[in-house]
Image 1 (cartoon, rainbow, N blue to C red):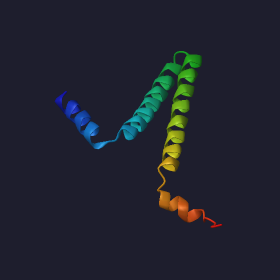
Image 2 (cartoon, rainbow, N blue to C red):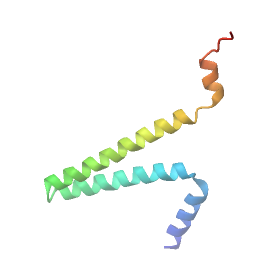
Image 3 (cartoon, rainbow, N blue to C red):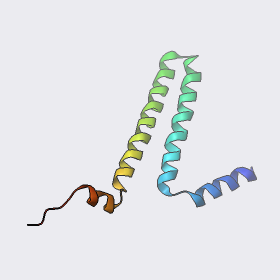
Length: 87
C-alpha cells in the first residue's frame, strides 16, 4: 500500500496536468476495453457497447494530443514557414 502511495506522489510531482489527463484517458480506455472484452463473454451487446466507449476515449486521446501539439508549436517555427510581405 505504501508503495502505491509513493508511486502516485512521484507521478503527481513529475507530470504536468496535461500529461495526467492524457494518462487518465489512456488508462481508462484500456481498462474499459478489457472490461468490455470480458463482459462480452456474458452479454455480447453490452460488451460491444463498452468497447465502443473505449475506442471513443482512445480517439479523444489522439485528438487531444494532436491539438495540444499544434497549439504549443513554437512561434519561431510558424513564422519561418509563413513569410511576411512588407507593404
